[in-house]
Amino acid sequence: MVKRYKTILSVLLCVLTVFAVITVTGVVDINKIINEREEGTTNAPVKTVADVFTTYTEAGSPLLETDIPGVFYAMRKNGDVSFFKAQGGNIEKLSDVGVFDVTVTCSGQKLPVTIHYVEVDGRTAGYGLFTNAEHPDVFLYEYAFFKLTDQFDSYASRSDLLLLADTEKSRFYDEDKVYSESFYLYESKETKNFLNEDQRIVDLNAKLRADYKMFTDDILHQTEDKILFFSSRFYNDYGHSEQVDIFISGGYGENVDNNRHILDVASLNFWKTEDGIRYFKLKNTEDTDAAGVSAFSLMNYNDENSREIISFDGSLKEDFIISGTKLFSIKTGEIYDVVTGENTKFDYGKFSTSFTPDLFKAGEDGKYCLIRGKSNLGKPSLAIVDTQTGEAYTYTDNVFGHIASMQALSDGTIILSLAASETAESYYQLTAKIGEADALAEAVG
Image (cartoon, rainbow, N blue to C red; front, side, top):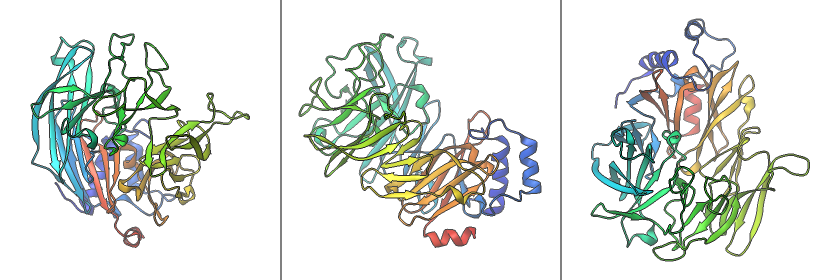
């Protein structure tokens, strides 16, 4: 880890501002940015990012979450993977990294991949990347992102580890991956399809349908005997369908085909609670009410029937962002917890001009939430919201236009991954330790 304090950080911010990829503010106007920094802006908040973010590290890719709290990974486009542990405002690169090769079969074609993994606090996290650039014999799959994780508890006697694959190239840097392929991984490094797929058919591209059985990171590590997952198999014979059901495995070891559990859900999200399964459902098939206004409901299914918990006006896809157990309203700034029912509202009036959010991230345990958007004549801004106290801290700086990922740990560690070149081949991580709200308020005055 490379550590610098405020003077060097200010230089770094200038470098990032000039050379980073703009994801919010559009085309880079280098002269304008330099002039603004030299002359200052009278209408911008006095709080600056350098008041709080006092250290940085460098990595080749954005830091993304693993299943292990406080542990993150960075994957380069060549498949190299590094792991980092964050705590107390600092980031430490992990050196004890294991590597092994494995080959899986997808749609009858063999995909070789090298997996890099770590074991921390008794848990396993690993990743690998397949591309067909060096494997011309694989013509059905151009790309596959692999994730290694601990097996579901109820299947641990079959294999210790579960290997998952996302074949959608556009999700490479996303934390919301959808794993269409899943495998038991045995100690011998042999693999077998996880859950039965005897009735799985091919799509129009001659590949097995990617929406037949889908896992996401949020639904892994369920402790019940039966496994819940997503499938669209009932809605389109030969192509991917946006309409989706929640399925349940049929018993020990395998899935019983066509065992639909909850029909026609509105997103690839569900949450297990003591009362049942919570999920979103559109008000009707057109996603509009009688007046033509979009609406959807948070539902609870208890193995017998579903009941509505609360309804929301607006489009789930266009007007809201889901992160962890939090549902964030872009229009109102409300942060609703779908499990506890707690509601926190971020006041956009904290900025001197209108604020338009475009990124939202619920941090570890949901204690802190991060909101990125535009304000102050188009400048990008960042808000850190403490959902327990309702306090919010806001910063406006061009550097926030280059955020590729953002993380918030329950101990107050904030990590921002920023693109540091026009080709996004290099990234920097700005870190801060929020800690107590009073300490942050004193730091930024």
